[in-house]
Image (cartoon, rainbow, N blue to C red; front, side, top):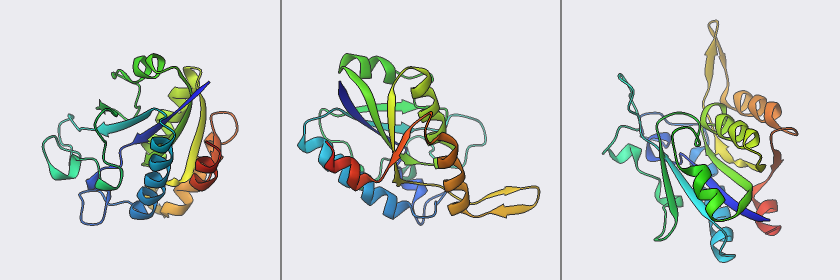
Length: 182
């Protein structure tokens, strides 16, 4: 059994001053950076997922922009896998599954952004593909959403999506707990 860390979309556009800033993105990135350091120290597989928007009218993660770059807090090192995606799921249209198989990973630790979109999609797809997933709930961030004219605060969106995937699709754990258990 091999664990791999999958860091999803911790990119500059999600930080203050970016095109789509998320609530708590610097704090979530710092937690993900601690996980990344722990995986590196144990020489466990690490995958960096980068979203590049190719759909017409996209306003963030535009190719060849500073905002689309992976944030320096979790920047890939030489030899670490980078997966480029164009949809919310880190598996759809990418070689992520093939790479995970090639390194023998059957357990995934997932961290990243946005909880309600790319994290939710990636966790559910990973479950469907047979991976045992742990989601570092404190190493994720999201934003407020509007439904029927009512604004749902980012914390409520985050907790609601975590509640929806907890148990069946993934085990939720704090990043410190995950790192200590490696």
